[in-house]
Image (cartoon, rainbow, N blue to C red; front, side, top):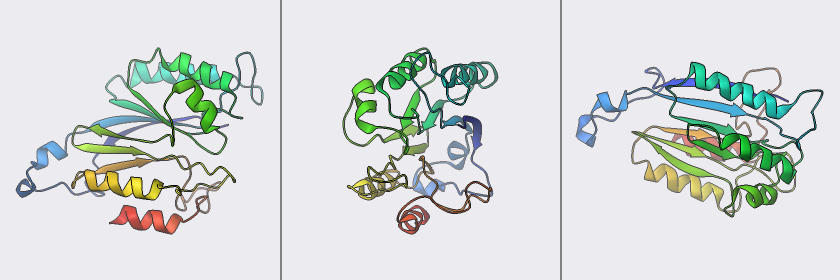
Length: 208
């Protein structure tokens, strides 16, 4: 189980370019720093249970407490999948209870360990667990990459088209895309290669 917290301030001048004033947006507006907290793989289990001797719920509580003390200036929290270790509805209910006490907006998507139906039964809504969130002059897109027949990520069922629609809606704004599966080699030992189907297609869309 891995739970990580990353505070991200952007833009990185070496990585992005801001729209010019001729596009109706001053560079100073694009350059305003925002902070996102990214948490992944909490792997919740039912109340009273542990995973490899660790209580995932307490671990997330400790993480969120750290966020509230050290990153009070953050704008939102993203949790990108494997919310529950086995898709247990009781685990999702516990997660929802803990997140209900968080001051910051929290946006979720799911991973290969999750059960989309069980998640929706607790958190509501229907269909893929994904969203596009306006954050000042940025657009944050969360993708549901869960494949119902394997542990690999995929974007079938109209998800590629949905992503393209959101990127079009961004209208030149910088975009942050968050997902559970890795679309490319992350150059770390445990992620030598992509674990997504059609990763080349995804990367091609994102590069445009």
